[in-house]
Image 1 (tube, rainbow, N blue to C red):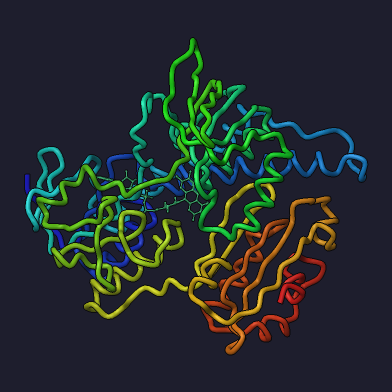
Image 2: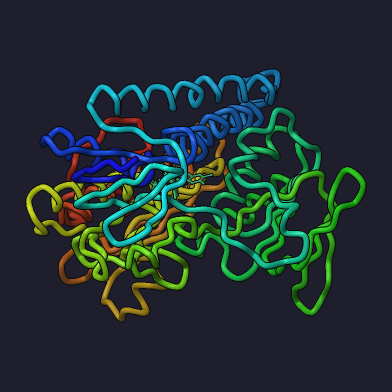
Length: 450
Ligand SMILES: Cc1cc2nc3c(=O)[nH]c(=O)nc-3n(C[C@H](O)[C@H](O)[C@H](O)COP(=O)(O)OP(=O)(O)OC[C@H]3O[C@@H](n4cnc5c(N)ncnc54)[C@H](O)[C@@H]3O)c2cc1C
């Protein structure tokens, strides 16, 4: 059967949904397709379920830190119960999203869509013809090309574990490994991170080093010069082989989790048939209007788009979806502004950053002043006995604008938004310093960081 639309959206996550609703509100005939339950990664398999688990890890850690400081009795994590609580967030999402699309009059399809030519996609025996397509197909774990790769568990599976294994190895030194290791270790597992090269490479490395030290103090076996070469089955568990510093090492684990990066999930879309050009990683190449230069009917948003300056994060996907809908409805006129995107590793405590790292600012030969300090002795961290705490700010000498801000410690994930606001709204460091902040809060530390 063949159907005709003004816009067909691939993906029901944050990159796809906003544009689908906006275009439909403007009277367009819109269809949306997903091969998985509706809702996308963030709501079902990423940010939201993850932070429910991080909340419990935070509580367990806080309770440990407050022993002999007024608290008695340790909080322990009941994994099965925590999972049930997590599912109370994720389980209702697909039905609620489907109902919202249907109520809006958006045609909904379930299945894998692929291009057959530049104007048509098929899905099973349905053909969807459209004036425009939006590819918001998200990302998938990066293929590693190592022996025994099939034994790897994905982040999606980790977030569905009914029982927490005793020994867990995380392959890769990115945010997924650090976040999950911090949760699993607090929940009673023995964890190992096997990373190579620079860990958490989007973050300022001085703060990363402090977090790595803290992660090791928690008991997470953190190996940062370990290139994983093979995963072998050993009875009910696995042996993970790695190389580094001229040495071969092994780790035994009951579960091995992929935390080694994600790439655009475009391989099933037959983009070649649709004349949609991609970069080497499979990201859809786009111009400044998020439109494919090789097929102007096609736009891309979120993790599937290869947009220079962008980051694979939920708020960026949602923002790009708005930019795309604006360009579709009003003609190409809106470009995305990627300045000041805050990003957080939800460890306990969290690590947050926005703008340039010190290394990036030096590479650009900017003239700037740096302020950096350990802040475990500052009231907001000492009150909760948080020993891993630090900040670094970079301020342009001439304009007094914030070039970058990096925070580790209590409420870093919230305070970073104030620095992001300053960067995006062109506020100066002096503006931020002269702001009145509610007290005592972590935000009220901000003037002392500048
Ligand atoms: C474990 C984890 C934790 C994360 N934590 C955070 C966080 O704390 N903060 C943050 O900002 N970001 C986080 N992210 C990243 C964030 O989830 C993504 O950036 C965001 O969800 C991307 O949205 P999207 O719309 O581009 O893609 P998605 O939400 O992934 O949606 C894409 C959809 O397209 C569908 N699809 C793909 N190909 C086809 C096809 N051919 N046919 C039909 N359907 C198809 C997929 O099934 C999927 O549902 C996390 C990611 C993971 C994996």
